[in-house]
Figure 1 (cartoon, rainbow, N blue to C red):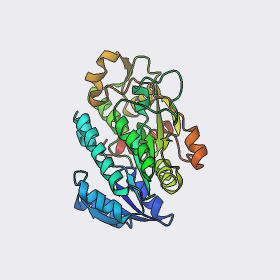
Figure 2 (figure 1 turned 30 degrees about the vertical axis):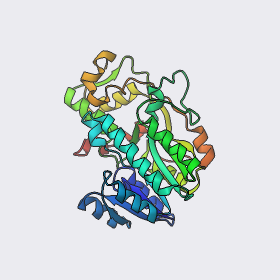
Figure 3 (figure 1 turned 60 degrees about the horizontal axis):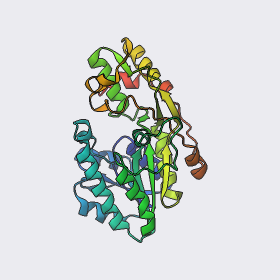
Figure 4 (figure 1 turned 180 degrees about the vertical axis):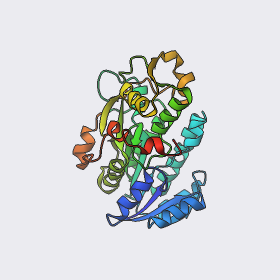
Length: 305
């Protein structure tokens, strides 16, 4: 299968490209810079130059492919506080892909997040793949992807854990939390820190994307979740130990000031199940969990941390 990937040189893309090539697929990766193009070429992928604002170019690339995986998102805009603009632009990209793939029967794998489940008010039970939301951040994009099934596209949507971790992660939420702890001189959590965040290793996530591309039923919602719920307090404690900083709880009203753009998320309970995903695609995470990964030096020795 010839697969077009946005975000191909990024965090998950850097694991997905070799995962696909190693399993007999051909990869065409979107690159917006010479550096990204060089990374893709070195990995054995073909390069399509462009960016997320070039909708005509994205459609042209999709039409040359047998399937599409959409990983890219304007994370810089999100981190700067312009989250709504990033969400709107992502929806435009998804709609462009839908138009290009309409009636083709080709697979399209989109990307969402499990945090939407918690922000929608699901509490007291794990969020599941059967939960279909009607409003909230990125929900319209998720439902648009699922709706492609009615237009002759074998679409699937992977809700990723807020923490996707490994030595390949250089700019994710884990690095943000470590950077905040360093800057503030304390590793913090909200309230008693009992709220849970799911996580998944990058290589396990890449494997899930391949399985979804190859065989996910049209309209599937899938969960990229290995650890279903790590207490946020325990994440803060490991970061505190590694940085030799105090660990403490803060009031919810102070979360925005302390955590910046993560302030709306750090206190939510995002307990999430991936049981149906594992059964549907025979996906079984094989790599270490978040707390074990945090004991290694790569998150704390990396210059980008």
